[in-house]
Length: 369
Ligand SMILES: Cc1ncc(COP(=O)(O)O)c(C=O)c1O
Image (cartoon, rainbow, N blue to C red; front, side):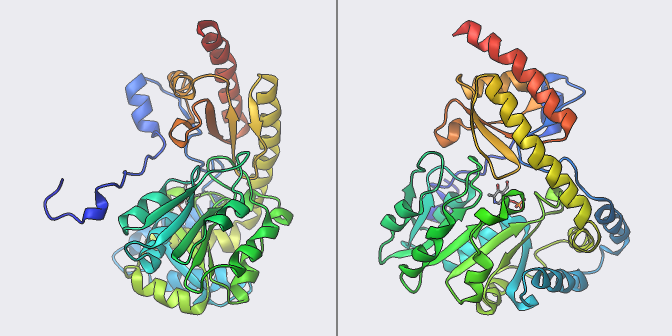
């Protein structure tokens, strides 16, 4: 243990990112690798964002005041709110971290689905929270089970919707009743990183709930739908009071000049390109799901830019074989799903490469078992 380190860090695990292109190329001597393990957007960055970011490089000696303000105004307008309702961060990950520091006191109970985005658990532990883990039901977060886990000591509920890694939505009708029965000091943090890929009629109106003054915040990102994962821009939508505190907790200028310029340009000029890409992703998601079923896989219907499926074989072994063929996917063993894989929907050719590699690999693995 590092001398002097806070005790709560002891039980915290480092975030397990998907495998990187360069590592896989070097390790396996491959020239072409398709990266479908981290739910990025293969269609991004979109053209005007790219141009704006390139044009910003020669100003990186200056702090990014202007675009901080512009981005808040633009996002506020999108949601029928003001800039005082938008907090910016270093990706949704940075936003989530600042929210955990805003709310969690040592010993607070924090409710987290058992099979969800791993960061919630680790940042909560870091703050010394007592974790209450609630298993999914049929691969979905069930808000009735979450409700049953609420006590007087509950401080935060992390809800990923659509859920990573399963791609499912919780029942939107149950969110307001859950919010109604919470203690006054408890908050729901809805992580809606993938919400733009979902059917809007199935999403809860989290922004409406914020406008009603409920204890809920919505976290979103430019990493997925807007294709700017490397630019690291995320944001939180919340009450003016929450955002004031969030800004106090966050370090000053917690997003970089090029990323902010890209996000502003995307919102202003790339909306059509982003929606065209999302349409292709939604269409290919359904097509790929059909092809996976033909291969004998059990596919969970998805509302995100990825699919979660059971391959019927050891997912870690299967993923390793796919990597050797130049396709990175995410085995879900760490979530307690030893035969499930999460695959990002890429471009048509990328999805084709994945399907071909899987079609070759499955029979090999079946032959051995
Ligand atoms: C559910 C969820 N929330 C947040 C993030 C972090 O996104 P960002 O790149 O904006 O930090 C991810 C990234 O994969 C995610 O899956």
